[in-house]
Amino acid sequence: MKKIVVLTGAGISAESGLKTFRDSDGLWEGYNIEDVATPQAWARNPALVQDFYNERRKSVLEAKPNAAHFALAELEKQYEVTIITQNIDDLHERAGSANVLHLHGIITRSQSSISPNLTYPLDGWEIKMGDLCELGSQLRAHVVWFGEDVPMISKAAEICMRAELFILVGSSLAVYPAAGLVNYVRPEVPKYIVDPVIPEIQGRRVFTKIEKKASVGVSELVAELLNEH
Image 1 (spheres, helix red, strand yellow):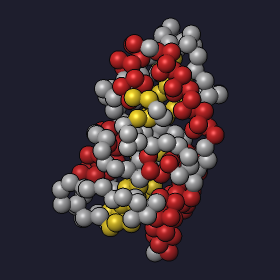
Image 2 (cartoon, one colour):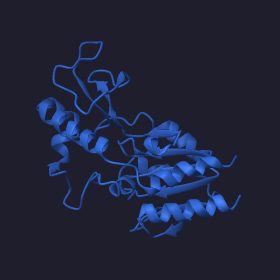
Image 3 (cartoon, rainbow, N blue to C red):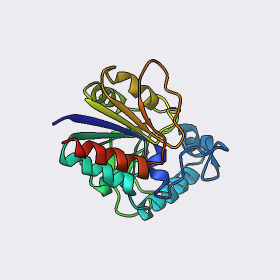
Image 4 (spheres, helix red, strand yellow):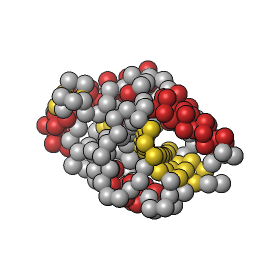
C-alpha cells in the first residue's frame, strides 16, 4: 500500500470549535503564551497553568471531529496513512485514524512534572493540584511547552522521509521544529497543502495548493485519491 503522511496543524481543529494556538493578537484563549505554556510559567504559578490546561481539556472533550478528520480516517481503506499532528487534541483518534503521532503531546493524558516519559491516561477533564505520579511529583498536562524538547521530532522526520505522498493541512508552518518536517519529504514525492491562507514554503518544494478550509479541501482531496484506485 502506498504510504501517505499527513502533517496537521491548528487549522484542522479550528473547525471543531477549538481556538488556534496563537491568534492574531498573540494570545491563546486570552492568555499570554509565556504565562501558561512555558516551564517558567509552571515554576511561577503551577495552579494557573493547571487550571488553563484543565479548561482546554474540557473544551477538547466537548469538541467533535469534523469532516476533515473523518476524511483522513477514510484514506486508511486504500492507503497506509500516518498522521503527524501539532495539535494536542484527540480528534484524529476519535474520527478513527489508527496511526497518529502527536508532536506536542496529547492533552487527554497527564505526565509527571519531573519525568516527561511517565504519562497516564485521564478519566475526566481535570488534573488537581496534589495529584501525584508514582515518583511523588505533581501531575501536569502531557503537552510540550515552549522551551522544552520535542521528543517525537526525530521519529516524525523518519516518517516524512518514507512518505510516497505528503499532505499538509491547517498549519502556518510558523512553529519549529515541526515546520521543518516538510524538508524531509523527498523532492519527487507529490505534495499537497490545504489551507484557506497558504503559507510561504521555504526552499524549492513544489506543492499542489488547495486554498480552502480543511473540511472542504481535505474531503475533496481524499475523494480524489480514493477514486484513483
